[in-house]
Length: 129
Length: 315
Image (cartoon, chains in turn red, green):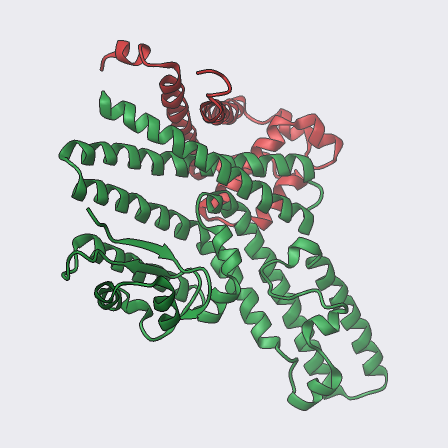
């Protein structure tokens, strides 16, 4: 694979490729976490009403699992805001394994990078790309 | 070179009316009947695929056969989801669920289908209460019946506030009794609440359909991709065919990926903002934000997929 070929591409093509790669990685990680780690993550946060409510509402299907993963991430990403609303147990969130936190933050960041890339690509004319 | 094409019928009409509105040449008209066996001599429902053949040839081309198969598949999918009347009454909902928005709505749709199941459960409780009261007669039992019914009506009212009634087929007609078509006279006469079983059946079917929305949306996207590739391969040179494979596969893959991510972003925002409210408002937020996120990022994902496919093809 010739890396120079990709480096010499126009900026808009590089953004499209980068964004597509990021999206693909994010989806793979998403599916891995939703099917391999979700139950473990939910066990660590079993005293959080936020998770329990949505767990009851969302099923065990692919869509339900992706939704539940999203809820776990919101609980982890905004601990103080959620604690203020009384929907998470702050101690449980703080004791949540850092490896899983890292995996969740990583997936979210890669996914957001892909989404940001797609947004920039769509508005490329305004950005003069 | 003339090509066969297809479109989605947007209103209920007979096949004769539909044919007349197309103003086809006599030659094309004869072929129209051969290609559209799925709608021959029936009322054509909104959402069904109508095929206009290639009139330069009397024989059925491979592309036309492909369109015919797709038309039957679509007919079966819609019918399997609940039959003619259901497809007709919920066409707007179906239309909104298809495409990339369905990926975003998918997750929220899961929650929504559960919400609709809960509504169906409350309706069943109301029905059971009516049947029970009929057996027990009047007096104190009647006061108890009215009090319990009031509680169930309040529960149903909360479950169906504003947007949350979407998909139930129940319209706001003033009082709850009027909306459900309940009157003591009609109940005593027929032994069941008017339109009642249809309402429950409709709610359950919508709930089931919501679960099928995402696979159906992806299946339609897949069919469109296959048709694009097939068209390029049958009309163009080998190069164009190869390029179409890269570009169309990229569009589909990243359209789906973008739709899923967009749906999750929308859902995450709703959970972050509306977590304590798990009622209809939060569900509406999930549905709208999930759908909008899925549709927007699905389309943008499809754009980057096309470009990425083209770059990889050129490489």
